Image (tube, rainbow, N blue to C red; front, side, top):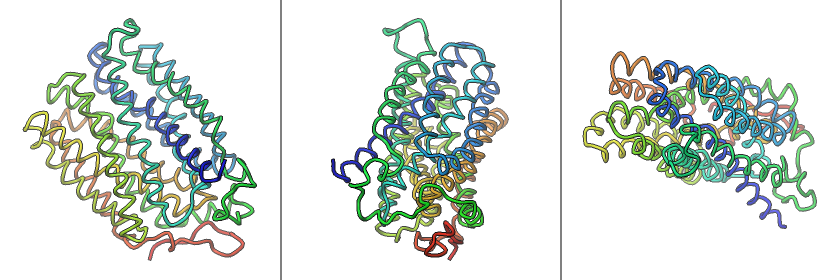
Length: 433
């Protein structure tokens, strides 16, 4: 098999793998309103479950990004996949809020292995000036995966013909079984680096490979932590993830409780957030590489400003009925996932390079998911005290802040970040221009 064919296989299998993570992540957003209706659980109890998941996910990002660089991404990702499967199977077997919280936390730990580890693998297999485009297409995995996960969980919970007894539990059981198959594909076909798959066929454009390309040293980590652009991207991602997780987990409940649509309708309409978000992810990558000289900040900042406008207008759009609400949700998806894929994917690789790509990605994603930690309580508090319309005003402000944080690194390019010397003694230097 040619090296290009091996690259394509790695691209496809890692794409499917991260989409599979979302099958066992986004299902929670559909199970929550079902639980709310069946068990009478309060929104605060549901928020605790989302918080527990998000807390362990955020902590795991800091840990597993580092471990993926040092111990090998395939080992870390594979272990995480197994934990995700087990935790979802356990959630399907227990109905108490306490057990769901515990297993959601386990799921968060397993989920945290995915993004940074797979970004590390992609950095090893794909390099060059088209990184933004490649990662934009690859980044559609969690956008399309989120859509499929929402639609599939909605179908699993609402259909009655197959395994009628489990009820809402099917929303955990069925995705876990599919992820089991995906995990087998990952272990069979993915290697950390081309040289591990077939050294003789590794593409010459990836050579010579630095001696320590797969294991950075402490000086590399220190240099990475001193990079101002890393923390600015992370802080922007904090506010973006606050918005995205609020929309991703709570749109179904918003449509059910506030706009009074059925659970089935709400599940499918909320899935537009991810489905149409694919357009934003790919568009952002192409614009940044082909029209912006691989600058990620301008595209992200402009799209975040647009997201703020759409969220501000969402209450008015929802008054136009289902079409208006769906239009606002779809536009929010485009304007969310464009900057999301750029900041957590291509920008992280720009800063961390091959050797520390997982660490950079884990740090950015970890800081971002601290914002996700706050989102369930922001949603519950604002929607209870001031209503859902006021919540969209708060999210609009967060989106604008996220875009404004990127303004100082407007001209940041991958070329601004370089190895400190020919011996690769540092991963990167300050990328601020």
